[in-house]
Image (cartoon, rainbow, N blue to C red; front, side):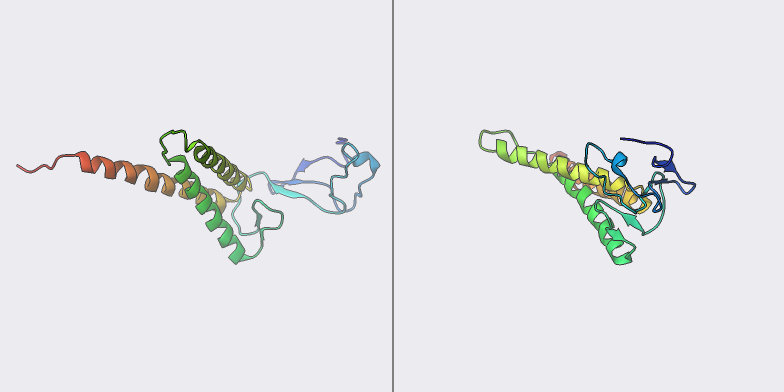
Length: 161
């Protein structure tokens, strides 16, 4: 990949990575292995520092965009992903011959949800970061702390004299 001073990536003053400017069209020298990078006449902006705001791209290009309702939906989605990941992490199945595939599928889904949460947080949006942390904390509390305390409460003898 040819990264010269005209087509390279540079950090902007607002903490974003600026890509190609709209005035610099791609030519045959800007191709990677014969494949066009797909940035013709577009300016790529990626935040490289945490920022507040509803204008974000989370997981998919253009989603949620600048729509407040879609941003709230994206935050709820990240929160639920983190809770589901914690639930899958703290699901205990005793290993038996019959549930090997179930355990493998649970592990696979846990890894998928972990990566989705990680990629969401990599949008550097503070709202997304907070919702991911709250989702993990809520999931841990629901599926680990409450479960363990309810199991221990049934074993503890009463304090009656």
